[in-house]
Image (cartoon, rainbow over all chains, first blue to last red; front, top):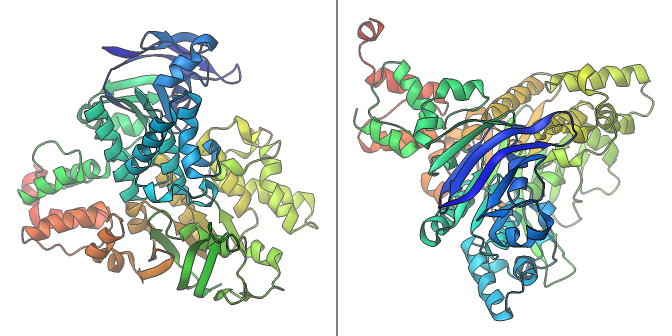
Length: 273
Length: 294
């Protein structure tokens, strides 16, 4: 089922240079889509359009058939679409972690008992259950980001939009958050739209959308995308380090077998030599 | 300027006991002049708290250890912080959020004018122009723009220009590559190298990007629970696989691949860079040169 349908999306901040120039795409229910593109390609603008923080200048975007960007439907849309942004400092409102996570569900009128359950679920999903009573402003950048993610998870959104949401995490923290996201996606059928620069994260997606200068230039599976090394490079993007190393090895006459996407693929291929 | 920290302790909300949190629990670390020094560690391990001590943003209280940055003793209340900050430039996490002035020029010039109020306008312009060009932006095109019109990557460069314009000897960067695309990251590394080859004598960089640290840093310190648990070259630090895993840290891709090969009995003699790794693998496994050249 098509859950998100974007048709001919245009968006202009200053009425001069459009940030998005006619983007068309659909996202299936339960799909895990990664969006990549260089800085300034329109990725974050797209994230803001997905839950109605911005209204398209032209074109439409619908979630479950509901038009996004219309004031009347805003509440319905935001119940369905949760967005985690890049910088956690910009999205913290409460002085205690527990209240911060409860803020969203409280606004939706979720019963108190269930809110408690949701807080526990969301905090343990991001590994922050011991910080329930902590003050967000006193946490480290990475910890704050996890709280921000928990705050959105507590809303139990159908669509989870992550705008560079793991950028501030340490590798272990990123892995944990990613596996939480994957679990939500696989087990609970949450649709995920992940905007990221981490190419390793992209390899986990079902499908990848590549944006460049406000236009969608490719879409396909991670494997299909990463085979286009040259095109990606021209767009200011790079393949994951493992793919790059595999390519370098081939150039130097090492026979790498099979398709390499991740470091474990490459390790396997190397061990066959 | 050498940086010497001895048993440095810092507790957030020290007075409110329920909220008190000891972020630094006796940090002992020496960063010699000339290093491209990496600081790694899990979130909450005290990395950012530590580097914010380096230019006196977080005060070092008496009895909480010792911190010397060059000739500046930060435990001494009479230390001239302004002089210190001229020499120690700080780029925070998400520097693009520090911009505030009406034009890029004014933003970049702000720190410089504060530090050197008597600097003639001509020199201010010269220095600002140089800083903006160094970070890879077109001075004439951008100087009159509002910083808020720029893209995220450009904003970050402007913020950095605003720090290097004062020509600090020590440049401290907290997670500078987070949120940058791969090309941005590489350009950024190149920029740091350029700065390091000119007036910046020491670079201190906090990062979660192990491949970045492995490739560019001369030394690395590992923070864990408010302490420094390991210091050494990237090679020495990443060698401790068990320790790294226990601390929730990754190893660079090249090290991961070396491990996989080692299990198969193939020992590679190379350092951590991608270049040296592929060369070592090619030497072992590449088909005879003559054949591939055909």
